[in-house]
Structures are given as C-alpha cells and as structure tokens.
Length: 82
Image (tube, rainbow, N blue to C red):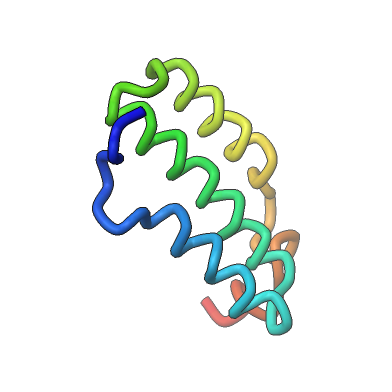
C-alpha cells in the first residue's frame, strides 16, 4: 500500500465533516460521509492500490444511491436555500 495520492487524506476530512453537520442536516451529512468513501477509492486508484474499476464501481454506487429527482428529496433544509 502506498502513502496515498491525495495530500492530507482528504477522504477522512470528509468523514469528519459528518460529525460536524449531522445534527443540522443528517441526510446531507450521510451524503458527505459517502462521498468520503468514494474519495478514498479514488485515492487508492490514483496510488495504484486498486484498479480503476474499483473506483468506478464506488462512484457508480454513490451516484445510484444519491440520484434524487428533486433537491427536497435530499434535504430541504440544505438544498431548499439554493
């Protein structure tokens, strides 16, 4: 295993954000946490630890899970302001 492609292990920063925002917006917090998982796979792919297909699979799962028709389906308190 390599030392990572991304500096400062940003995927873990995303996961830390989950704890910061979960009370205000639990669904958005979960999305950020899940994005951290995808970022982690991206880091592993770019570092040569997994192949591109592993990253694309994680990205596809994220997109499938969070592909909502309306912003309100995700979290009105966050996206309703946009």
